[in-house]
Length: 352
Image (cartoon, rainbow, N blue to C red):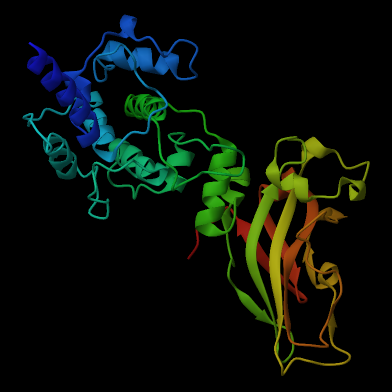
C-alpha cells in the first residue's frame, strides 16, 4: 500500500513537471475550485470551466497565477474551439493538438518548437489572432486592435513576458467572443503602443489615419540632414495618456479647449557631418519643422528637440517638437512645413 501511494504522488509531480495534460487528468468541477474567489479572472475561469474546456487540479485549486506553457495554451485553444483530436499519453500528449492547429493554420511555421516552455505574450498574441483569422499574421498590433490582448500598463505590452493561466483563460474567452462575431473593447493604450512599435506612429489608433514619411531623410544644405523618426498623437483631455506627461502644460494656451484638440509630437533627428560644420550655420526647429493649422506651439518637460541647433561641430540632435491642433483638422490630415516644404505626414488615404 505504501508503495502505491509513493507511485501516485510521483506520477502527479512528474505530470506537472513534464507538461502532462493536467486539464483532463487532474480535473475539478467549477464549484470546487478553491483559489479563484475574488481573483480578477474569476468569472472568466468559471465560464471556461462551465464550458468544459478547462479544469482545475486534484487539490481543488486552479492556480490562476501560475505560468502557462505553450503546449497547455495550444491544448486549451483546440478544446475551446471544438477541435477533435486522438489523445496521446505520455510526454508527447500535446502533439495531437499542435498537429491539428498547424493543419488549421493557427500555428505558423515561425512558432517556437519548445512546447514545454512558458508561453510568451507575443506568442499568445500570435495564436490568438490566427485562431480568429488565419489569414492574419498574428502581430501584437493586430491582437491589440482586435481587443484580444491588453497592455500591462499604459506604456508596456511586455511582449516577451510570460503569461499566466488566468490570462490565458481571459484571452481564450475573447477569442471565442470574436469568433461569435462580437466586437471587443480595445485597450487604446495597448493598441497605441503596438502601433508605435510596428510603424513609428499611433495615428491609426488615435485618429484613424495612415502615417507617411516615417524614416524619411531631408537634406538641409550640405552635410546636414533631418530625419522623421516618430509621429505621436496624445490626448490632452486624458489624464492617463502617457505622452501628455512629456508636455509642459504651462505653455498650453488657456483659450485652447483640451477636449477639442490633440497634441502632435513629431520626433526628428538632426545630423551634422564634418562637411556641414559651419560657424554661422544653424537650425531653429520651431521655425523649420512646423505643423500647419496648429493653434499652440508647446514646450516639453523632457525629450524635446533642442530649440536652437548650431552647426559648430559634428553632432546628432534628437527629440520631439510638439503642437496642438483641433480634432476637426487632425482627423483629415497632418501636414508639416519641413524645411520650407509642405509635407503630409498622415492622412486617411491609402498609400500608393
